[in-house]
Structure formats: C-alpha cells, structure tokens
Image (tube, rainbow, N blue to C red; front, top):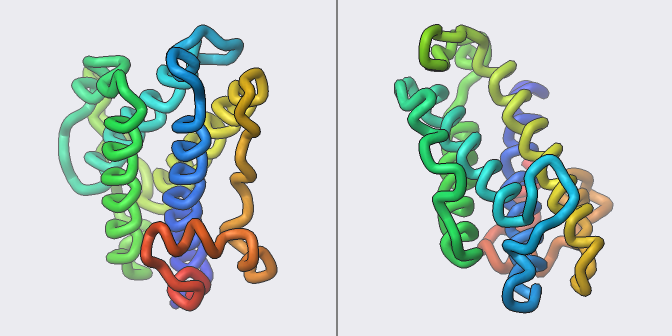
Length: 185
C-alpha cells in the first residue's frame, strides 16, 4: 500500500475514534449544556457537531458520485439530541472509512464533482479527502474548546495515529471492536 493510501486510512480511523471520544465527553454534560450558548464559530456544541455531520454528508455524497449538493445544508441542526447526533455521525464515519478502505492508488487522482448549486466544483479525490479531514479536525477543536467552559474535561483527541499512543486508545478501540493491528496497517 502506498504512503498516501495508508495516511488516508489512518486519518479516517482517527476521525472515527476522535468523534467517538468527543461524543462520549458530551454525553457527560448536564441537561441543557449541549445546546447552551458558547463562544465559537457556531453558537453551541450542538450546532458545531451538527455542522461536522452535515459537511461530512455533503462531501461523502460527492466522493460517492452523488449530486446532493446544497440540499445537504437544508436543515442546520438535523440532530437535536446528542444520542441521535452520535449515531448519525458514527454512520457517516463508518461510511467514510469504508470509502477510504476501498480506494486504490489509481483512485486518488480521480475527479470528484461537487455540486454547489449554480456551479460544479471539480477536484481530485485525495484533495477532497484532505480538505474533509482538515475540516473535521478544525471543528472538533472548536467543540473541544467549548467543552473547556463546562464541568466536563475536554477529551484528548490526538492519540490515534502513532504506535506509541496505543496504551491511551485501548478502551476506544474496544468500544468499536477494533484491534491495534488493524489500526496500524
């Protein structure tokens, strides 16, 4: 496997694990705290995490050859409750992981058509995936900062890439039924 494919796989796995850890932290919030106003680009944890979900759906649809486009943004907060958001995000994370695991070297420079209403953006698969992973990380960081203003400690979100961090992610892998060997391939 090429270094590029390996990296994309690890980023997709990281995405799944980091979202799981973030959602578990949010589940420890007292009633009302998830939707409470917070400082950030989006006005609450609920809004921020729904944005990640919506954008994931938008780009995954395009990567799979769909034409969902702006319709992905029709409802700004499709998941009002955290449990629904966590389930929906897990499904999108699994969808993204399956897509990335199915890629071959020749797929990386394939053209993706991203429907944006009045125009269709065209970019390479690897560039779209790179953008998507950056977007997710950016907004998870904002949610992490929002958690800092609550009584719930923000979770560590960057222990999923290097081999040396294995001791920190055992519980997270077990929740998904993943093994360390599968993660490090």
